[in-house]
Length: 179
Image 1 (cartoon, helix red, strand yellow):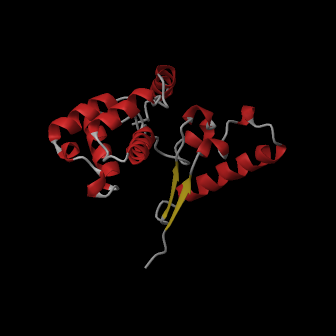
Image 2 (cartoon, helix red, strand yellow):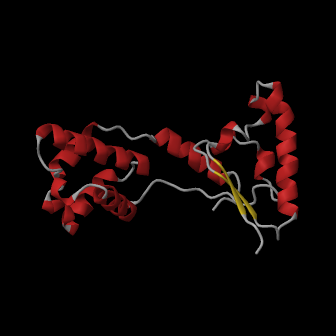
């Protein structure tokens, strides 16, 4: 059996930063080494090494890392749509014990209506909204209800605003290789 490895770079823009934004001479020396190593990994396609980089700031990554032979594909993962919001809502509610949840939260109609209000929020936002709603229900000595979740949504700001979404769309348009 051939050994396998996955290298996952979280917040990749910190390590793969554009060279003009690097204030550190150490990073200025590391970037060419990383580019060389990525190219070596790519040349040996049959060796089972997979490099995955995740970022919320793709424009902060040096373009040299995004060329074929290094990080070969760029995937844009947008905000959840209504169906995604329903799945996320159910997922985060399932983490709670059933005796903490109001029974109306299991109804399709209520899930859809809540999901409509959650469109535009990130998955992390939705998780935090459910956590905050659970805390509020605990303080009120109640079950988590649709009303408590709706009240939490009203006061919880979206972490991605319209300006940021436009920046992502512009970045995505700049290169036809981004799926």
